[in-house]
Amino acid sequence: MSKTLTFNAFMAKQIAILEETGKKRTSETYRTALNRLNEFLDGSTITFSEIDVNFIDSFEESMLSRHICRNTTSFYMRILRAVYNRGVERGWTRQRDPFRHVYTGVDKTQKRAVSVSVIRELKTMDLSAEPKLAKARDLFLFSFYTRGMSFIDMAYLRQSDLWGEVLRYTRRKTGRSLSIHWEPEMQEIIDRYPPNLCGFLLPILTDPDRDLRQQYKNAILNTNQSLAVLSDRLNLPVHLTTYVARHSWASIAYSKNVPLSLISEGMGHESEKTTRIYLASLPSSGLDKANRRILKML
Image 1: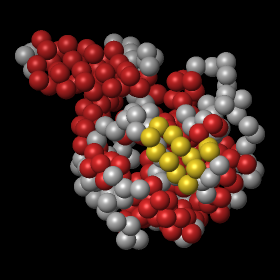
Image 2: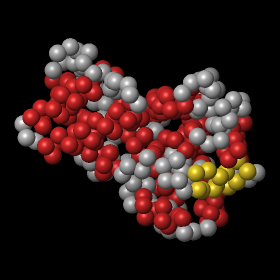
Image 3: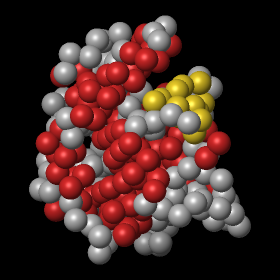
C-alpha cells in the first residue's frame, strides 16, 4: 500500500476486515468512530502524516461542543489511536503520539482545567507583536468570561445578540436560550478588533465569500495551534484549548463555593444533562453574580 493512503481509507479497510472475520460488534464501533471523524472533516480526507496533536485536540473539542460526553469521545479516541498505531507499524508515519493530550479514559487523574493564577498570567502576557497568538488568547479569555461558552457558540454570536448590557444567544446544539450580563472584560476584547463584515460578534467567521463551516473548522485548528504555543511558553502541564477555558470556569466556580445548582464541577465530570436542568431552573441573575465574582479575581 502507498504511504499516502488516507487514514479514512485505511480505517474503512480495517472495518471491512472485521466484518469479514465475523467481528460485527467491533466493526460497528469502528464505523461509528469513522463516521464521527468524517463528519468533522466534512467530506475531506486526511493522511496519517497530517494527524497531529492540534488536529486531534480540535476533533475532541468539536465533539465536546456538540455535547458528546467524555466517556464517548474517549471511546472514539481509543479506536482512532489503535488505527493510527497500525499505520505507524506499517511505516506510513513516524510515531508522534497525537493523542497525548486528549482524554482516553486511561489517565483517570488527567486535569482539564487551569487555576485563576494561570488565567491571570495568560491575560497579562505581552503579545502585542504576535497578533495570531493574541487572538487565540482573546478567544480563550472570552470563553472563560462568558461562563465557559463553547467555541461553536462563540463563532456564531452575532452583533445583534448583544442587547445593551445583556448578551443573548441560543445554543446551537441544544436550542436552549441563554443570557449573560455583558462585562467590561468582554467589551475590551471586542474593542481590539474591527467590526466583523459578516455580522458576527467575534473575529472568527470573517470572510463573507467563504463557507462558514470551513472557516469554523480552520478557526478551531488555528486557535488550538496557537494555544499550544502559549501552553509551552507558560510551561503548563495542561494543554490549553478553548474547551479548557470552559472546564476551568466550571472548576473555579465550584472551588469558590458557587452552588452546584448553578454549576457542576468541571463540565463533563458531572452529568452535563443534569447541569443543564439545574441551570434552566434558576434565574440568570444568580449566574451573573457568580460570573462577576470569578472575573474580579483576575
